[in-house]
Length: 224
Image (cartoon, rainbow, N blue to C red; front, top):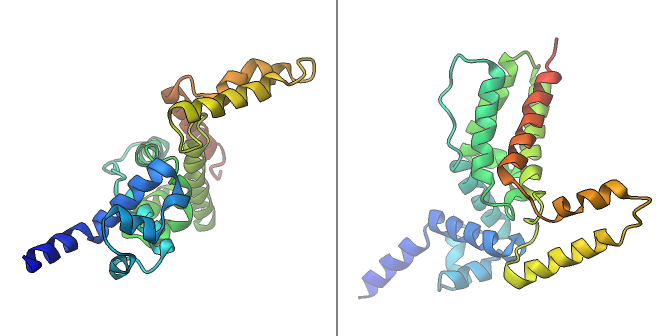
């Protein structure tokens, strides 16, 4: 029986399962909720049992980022126009990040800490180099694109807080009231746009417009 229990614990405490649990916790309650102690409680073990895989919280956050990057399904390279290929890759990145708005801020500074992140960076930088960007320009542009996708996800109206139900409704109501109190003569455009700062009326359109900005902007600054 002891052997069976030990095997069950090891299966429950694999690096992959712990990273998955940490990401799920971050999705529910935000990054601040992810601690070694809380993760141990979620897996019904002592904190010491987690140190075989993660030495501290920062290592757990690395594991979360690694899991998100590993979920990026990159398109097969083609001979098509570089900007069309760039859009396909960025859409794949967006699809992986979009379900995790409360964990997205972890990603940009951790792209070089996992093989999946390195593969993604290599793909984007290589694409930009072939488009005519210098090594310096390509690396800076790739970093800007990733940070912009993260910001696009984390800034989606109504998705900034790990709240649900009445708590989220209270926050939204407070935002609406604050915007509605603005002097109409000074801020007519803000008042007209107020509802769209609180909730996203069309998520697909919101992300499509953001992707257009990124791709068209990259094309616009392409070296002559």
